[in-house]
Image 1 (spheres, rainbow over the protein chains, first blue to last red):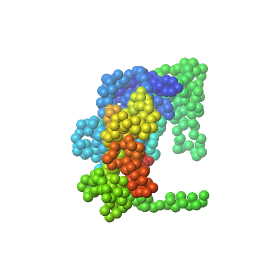
Image 2 (image 1 turned 90 degrees about the horizontal axis):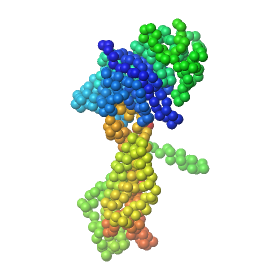
Image 3 (image 1 turned 60 degrees about the vertical axis):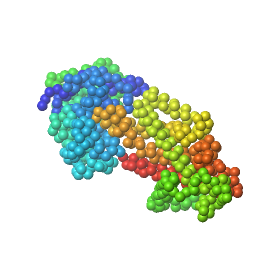
Image 4 (image 1 turned 45 degrees about the vertical axis):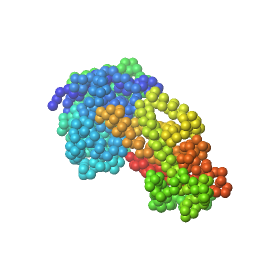
Length: 325
Length: 287
């Protein structure tokens, strides 16, 4: 069951933009065990997606990217693997589910064709076998009348159905790691739960580790074993999910938690949003990156960048003056 | 003003079926009949398009010669069919060759970007800098006029537009998530081009090609009219129009009948192309 699957060691991912080079992922380290579910939470632009795409080395729009550090997956450093070897790992051992199921399926190819293609390519099944396997897979994803759906185009299906198809495609080769990049953000709330339950069920079934990326703390708290909070390209806090929810050490984490609407508060309670904006990655401030928005900020925060440190057990955080709980 | 608005409103209320009949089915029937006659021309009871009947010069329509005869007493109907054969051959192969080359250049440059893209775009701009007909005339003048040369020349002139369309659609599709998803599944670039991007852009490209065929047929006609097309006595629609031109005052049918055929054929191709394009667009927008 247990055992180390993925180890990321001081990973830096730089993007070349028109206005200069920036580190979208800055000195990030973490470990994932087999079958573990690891959540990454953070606001838009915090580097969550870039981090996940760095792991499989697939980036949108040929942005020029340079990477430093190590990504050790089952003893191999993915960053130094030749592209051809990497291609074998993608889909087969590390699969990915994308945010928007409206655009992650090819609009002009039938559903069946898209699933069967992966089965033939990744598992080496014959065409007839993969057809049966596709129906089987779709049944286990909770898709009704799956045989009929094979000859449908993505546009004939609802968003939730398409995301089920995307998960079926991703889980078909029984990968060791599934990266789900905001898999429910584009779906409505009633479907979100179903999709997340499905992801949990499927990953448990094959002992697949999952990296669940979200900006929704509620989702993360319910579906992950460990969680990392990402801010401005850095991990600012990481621990077991229950521990983090109970004892946030970094002011950003607790601010995030406070900004989630609470059903038990009286009507017309004002939502406590975090003031200000994250710093531009092009000109990060000296010292802590959360300085401008932090309520407990002191002089040291402006001059020195806190290192991410271990506090006793395995609760890591990046803060000079952690919250006392 | 109000009259125009009323007219536009009435136009806007054409029932879809009537619209489909006039803009799709009649043109489709016209093109199919013409194609059938052109393909099976040798089996049809037509007059020899090259044979002159000197007892019947410039005859108007008669039971014997349905559409009359031209200056040399040759049957116009027969010549129109054989002339359409030349026009359609050129009008089919030139755009298709141009499309294949353009599709290749467009997809590759739109997907891989970088220097290759700059090179292709530059090349296209250079071809576009020459006026189509002048370019075609120059090449035909030196290489000699024959159907094959004509096809080559006209496919060169159809490369730029095809490349631009293919490149533009590749640029939009290459950014879509399903391309990223395919890469995350371990697909190679070649596989993505072939299996993910091409199926998306081929239909719009084909719809465009139909309209482009009509342009090529017009250019072929113009070249024949200017005397640099396929040399006589091979009948072409443009050549027939040119030949009848001196007698347009006394015997207008020699010029106008082939012109009418050319007009109807080009119109039909355009209408079908438009219909196809709008149908493809509907499917696209539903995504």
